[in-house]
Image (cartoon, rainbow, N blue to C red):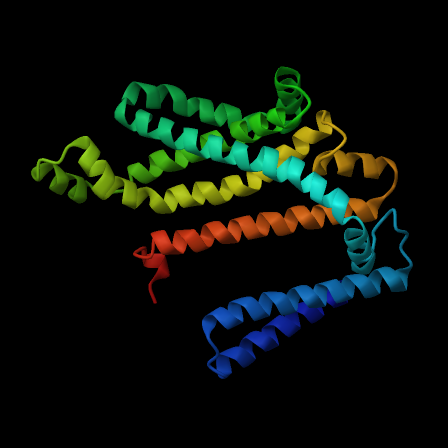
Length: 278
């Protein structure tokens, strides 16, 4: 396994150096080097499992996971619909939107900001495994309880990041808006909200992973006979680790695509940010 990691690192290093010397486009290098690194890791994983004759219940090979994934497309699709479409996406939208709107209200009402922000640290410290059973009892065993779990996990990251972004405009810029006689709303729309966009997108990207984790973990504590978390817990009991890894692969690909889409939108919205300048 250590040799596989070393080979993957060396292959990525050589490919990166070759692309640099060939003056290849930066985007090509950003795609090719991680892809090559991942392929080498998967090959090393396959050879290690086959050579060591590791049982399936301990660590399935990538080929076994792929075979299970292909043969279980209907089951995986139903789990995807239950967890991602019905729980993660609605919960993520509600949590992020409500956190953003409450942040605007807190920015306007300082008493609310000083009273609500300390609760963010309290909620962040709450264990998921403790909150999830309570929400299942409140909202039932179907997807609403999982969406509620996602809302709880995504609300305060958006609230805190938005407030930090709204205060990121410099004092000179705020003084200039006041000297022009700009109202709070005008200054918000033309100065402070654009300055907060990097912080808002940072919260959106963080919440994209938190939402997936929260929904899957919540399904461990009660759900209909469908869902990614439900499938993982039942297949572990049946020692079907290839199915568990197939669900993990679907969740990982979904989360990566979601994160990548948000990053693409962020580049279009915050093209002016210094981090994107050459």
